[in-house]
Length: 460
Image 1: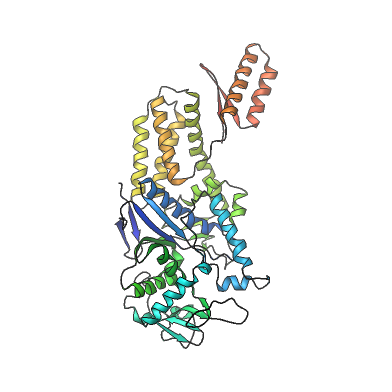
Image 2: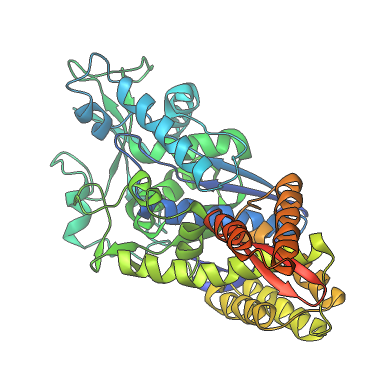
């Protein structure tokens, strides 16, 4: 089995990734709070973890991926004030989230746990923390006492004396400024659940601790999300989970850098975001995947429409090479140029780049070099076969190549029309032959005249 080095946010080091159970990877990724449409910033996170999953599966691991849905939250309650029921909001935008995953070729996780369907596990975890004296009660809810966790801040390296910690959840009755709510007592007009320590609803952080433990137990391999979740969300998850289980919880913490727009963080709260539906009106899902994976996942990526257009140009080169080798293979029309060693070497180098903390920019250089060799040379059968296998493998990992745009029947008909055109040209019936050529071109099909006869090419 191959290895991979991953940067662990907890240790700030590149580490050899070794799953707890050989050949099986448990991975939990923080999902959305569905109170509005998902934007391209969200897409970067979920495309990356789909990419990581695909790469681990390429390495013969069985990956059990879980993405949660926070379907009860202050933002949902606020967004639902004009609705007949608060449940309308998460229902509508959860459907949109699923649509986004499908459109962007993101493989479905093992499950999507909803907070509202795991309330019993959440209540049980809070009761356990109460029993162990990590949680205390004040007038508006139950709070976790961070002073009880001596290594609090180990993930984010947060300074406990920083005034901003207290501003995250302001309440003068808290024991420490950084203490956070695990349970909020019910308020008039808001949804609530019955609990032995007082009716209400969970705080944000406790939910992921309870749901991940429900499916993975006391320890699992990878916990991931956007870099904005390092503090306070993931820091607080660690505190309460390790307080409950009495020891280390997650082995590897993986975080994706911000996607910015005009150098500012893309977010719903700032109103500076581009929706997935808006983007897909102009670009294919494959181009979006190509663009969002073009920067290393720990490097901030700034979104502009011009950069998307540039990405489309770069992607088109790779896609044309892909179509070229597919069509050579189908028509069994090969050249005499042997570049098998060069292409295999570039493919191998792309995988080495991925083994080292998923360095996609380096892998892209190798992929583009392969595309250049394909487009500039008439490859022999061996070289074409190696290229086809290499690109298929890379697409299993990146999922950024286009689907084949033709059927065998369409290919046969296009070839027959090209042969008819050749006959018409021989008979000097150029008006009719040009009409066939022009009509095929309108359908994205070009004809290349070779010494072996006409060859059709379906274009991107």
